[in-house]
Structure formats: structure tokens, C-alpha cells
Amino acid sequence: MAIAQSIDKNPAELKDVPGWFPPLDQLLFTWFLERQEKGGFRGDLVELGVYMGKSAILLGQHRQDDEEFTVCDLFGGEAPDGANQAETAKSYSSLTRQAFERNYLSFHETLPRVLEAPSSVISAEVKPGTCRFVHIDASHLYEHVRDDIGAARDLLLPEGIVVLDDFRSEHTPGVSVATWEAVLNRGLRPICLSTQKLYGTWGDPEPVQEELLAMLEERTDIGLSVQDAAGHRLVRTRANKGMQAPPFPHSRHYTPPEPQQPAAPAPAAVPAPRRPRSRARRIGVDLMPPILTRTVRRALANRSR
Image (cartoon, rainbow, N blue to C red; front, top):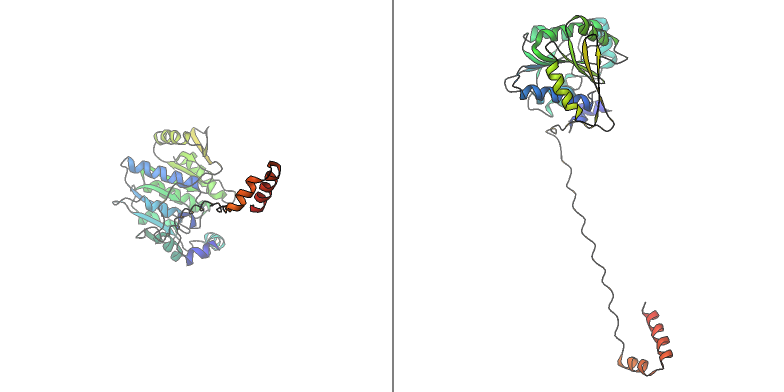
């Protein structure tokens, strides 16, 4: 239902775009990208595997005027081998380039550079040493992920950031093997881990880790722990209950809700005017004995209620 809606209807907010991009990872993407921008660190952006465009839309928000943003996906096209074709048919049969482009253009005036091809083409399409941020979320098969990690290493600037999706999911052991192999044998240095993604660099992770820890320690909506393993400091993060995604610009098709008009105060009740007693009745009451007078007055008061 959600996928069909994304094809037939423009999303109004980022949360309306189907995909697996939790609030914690939205926060981490935003923090890493803004840190680079505030520090004057420029470079191109790359995403391998876009699904319906949720993370690509956020990445596109951070493309600077002198940068290029390239996305690469099969979009249901021919896979390079039988195993990859089976994976695509099982998990992404409803993915189309049209759906991605419609979602992306709901938030941006122009599309990124779109490569409708296997992720293996990226090294020939993007110059080495030109990227500041690469997000890998394409095939989950070990051989493909291993090659995507190798391509990211070649594309990234020395202090660039790579993000590996599904590195710990039970249904993607190939990603886990390729990820930790890169950490142990290929020079990848972890910066932090979320429930879903590993953020790393082939540069020095310590400066960015220290800044990240300072930010995380001030938040009450993120759980934090630090462990050491095989000579690496692993900063583990998790979203606490009720964590909200960071603010994100609305779609160009967003319709704000009608402002609520304050309810008009109810008019104060006006007591009914009492009928004046006639002169004859007043005289009659005044001339009666006191006991009888009180009885008559009570009777008259009960009648007027």
C-alpha cells in the first residue's frame, strides 16, 4: 500500500517516502554532513542503492553548489549475475526509476546524476579521490558489498565518510562479513555504529569521534556506549523510545494544516428579571401578622422559582 501510494501520489513529508531510514540515522547523516560543511570540507556525494529515495532526498539537501551528487541503482533492470537478479526480484520488484524520481523531485528542483546500472560501474563514472560522503545500500551479497567498499575507498577523500547499511541484520550476513573484513584487513576505521549502519573512514577517526561523542552525551533520546575491539574504538548508538527525526524541509507539494480558530467564549448567562410586586400585594403583606407574612413570602418565592 505504501509503495503504491508513493508511485501515485507525491509525498508531503520525508516520512511519507517508503524506506528504511530511522530517525537516528537521519540525525547521524545530518550531523556528519553539516560538520563537513561547517568545516569547509567539500567533495561529491554518492549513494549506491536508492530504493524509493528516502536517504537520497536527505543527501541531496546537503549538496553544495560546487558538488555533484550521483546515485546508482538497477531500478529493476538486468542484474550482473543470477544471485543478484534473484535478490532484486525478491526484495525490490516494485522499485522503478519513475517512483524514485517522483519522490526526489517532490523535495528538490532537479534530480541528482542517476546511473541506472549495477553498482560496479561507479568507479568508472566518478573520479577517484573526489567524494566526501558515500552511502552503500545496494546488493547484500558478499562479493558485491566487498567490491562496493573497495570502490568507496577509491572515491573518498582522505577524511571522507562511508556508511554501510545492514551491516548487522540477520538476513544480510554477506554485508556483515564484507564490513568486518574491511575493518580488520582493509584499513576501514569505524567511527560509530547505529542499529542499522556502520559509519567509518579510511582517515583518522579520532577527531570526528570526539566531536560526535560530545554531541551524543548531551542528548537524552539516544543511548550510548563505547567498546574497544581489535584495536578499534566502537561508539554504539541506539534510539531511545520516542526519539524524533530531525527537522527536514517539507515537500514542495506540502499543504499546511488549516490554522485552528480559537472558540468564541460562551455568552454569560443573564438572570431573568424579577417581576415587581404590585402595590396592593406589598401593602397586604406588610399588614399581615409576622408569622403569616413569612409563610406568604416563602410561598411567593417558591412560585417564582
